[in-house]
Length: 394
Image (cartoon, rainbow, N blue to C red):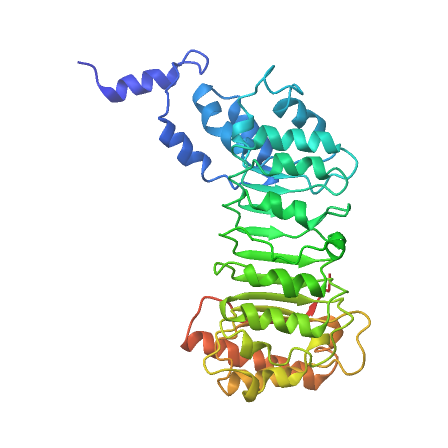
């Protein structure tokens, strides 16, 4: 019997074109591909892998189409691939079941309302995440959207057309697996509706992002039926709502929230409007808030419950903030040093709050960082200690 070593050397000595192909098990190919991050810059890599052989094609094609990166330049070709015919019964493509995430947020006038509905219809059995386009999502898309029963994330925040909340919630009633919802910013039709019965939210909703045309009536009427699974709430750019409505929502949901964002512009909220926020939200891990709505009293002993778990704090500031808006770093230093916010690790602050404007504020910010680093060494919670005082406002 010949030596395996000699046989291998003889095989390697042959020209590459004459060597027999050594098939790799699908598990090995999948393991190799798992080291390639799923991001836009690696799309050409996955495409090249599909050209290698049939086993490599079968393993890499699912990664190539799992989250297609759509741009105005490649959208037409993507549609031809996924929707080769307007009639779904005439021509079917095996690639459409591979698409699980569809982000049309970069499209403005590249699609049409009927084409968006058609795409959702083709992907209804498998799509889990969808970002709607700005101009080509309309009422005819809701029928197709309601059939996407595997949807986990739905982002309607870019839609420019006014959306009826009644139609929206009729659609949401079919999305039983939905976990994250970005509400449409143009939901002004809600104030014209006469139905006072609260809407029913998806039962697994964990994150809700509100913006734009939300009204006081909406907050008072419809937020009470949110499920117990909700942990993340964002309210921003809601210029029509008042302080009493925001406070009502926080009193209603505060105990279950772990992540909260309240951002400008909200012209009917003033400085110190939300100084009891930590009391009504005793489980918050991350807070992003405009300093326009709070005062240093928020971080004093009387407004912080014992053992509050806050770890991440982002302080923003609107461009038209008045002179009363102020949140010096020594206020947070005292809260951490005294043990009121002993879990706080990350503080990022708008450049408009001027923490870097004087030697004193820079020194206070440095002291804050030092005490948070000591806290992480003594009681690690996995959040790297940092103080950034030049965060741009978006």
